[in-house]
Picture 1: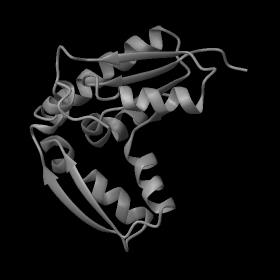
Picture 2: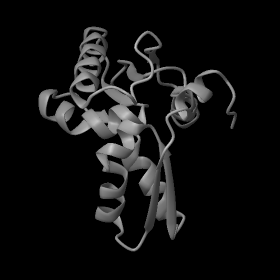
Picture 3: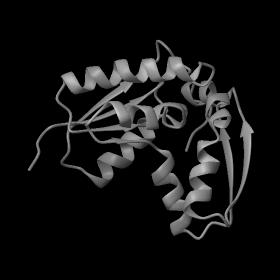
Length: 157
């Protein structure tokens, strides 16, 4: 059994919902959560900046000897995940694939994607949905205030 921790990061505290689900599913796992509120939000940054920030956080988590990294940020997942997987040997999971799989499991016919400018600009949500099931219709809308509203607690589950 691997007793090392799982590392999770987001551009702020919105990823605590991911943290919560992981602790429910894997209650015996120890977790390190990084909410990068200093550089929040990621959604208005360039792809290069997001990759650079993500690499800094991942390097820190690797120094903490984590066994797995979860990117709980839609923007970082959509902009940096592919590149990060090329750089690091440690398993890295983003939020796009599990979310899409959940939609497929529920036999979803259409998906509305409301996300940061960076997430929408990447078109990764649409691309990944079409790869898994090209019959699912997608509608994407940039919502630049969504992340700040979530961070301020204006949006609740």
